[in-house]
Image 1 (cartoon, helix red, strand yellow):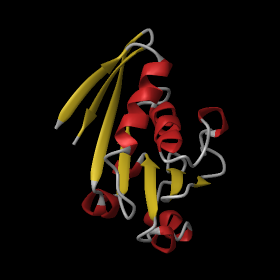
Image 2 (image 1 turned 180 degrees about the vertical axis):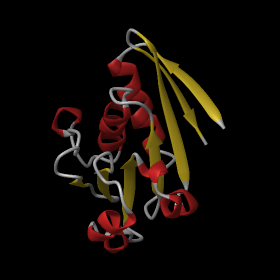
Image 3 (image 1 turned 90 degrees about the vertical axis):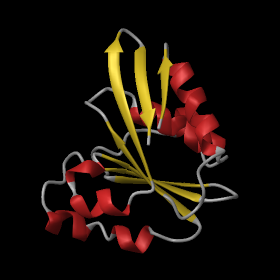
Amino acid sequence: MRSFITHSAEETTALGRRMAQELRPGSIVLLRGDLGAGKTTLIKGIAEGFHAAAAEDVTSPTFTLIHEYRGPQATLYHIDLYRIDTQRELDTLALDDLMDPGSILLIEWGEKFDRLRREKGTEIAIEHLGGDERRIVIQ
């Protein structure tokens, strides 16, 4: 387990870029934290680290549920399950079809589903400490 404190959105994005060096295609990453904690901001850095998207092009998939970012090393799927409440709704997203040796699933609110918690490779908890400060714990 590793813990970091960031003091700005830029630092959170930079941490995501560094984390990209440690992630491998075929991984599932669960990101948890309250609304506005900085989950998408961290994913902006991960997408940049994989040369899959520029930070300004990464947005929250709260309403579309899944965004896809293709990079030379991996395809990133940014998934937001905030509005998904039942296993049946989760099944309609066909996440199993996205799990591929060349993809990484970055799942916000995945802790809501036991199945995803069992399958995850990495869990990242983001806590808003006030102002622009965040505590980011990687397990």
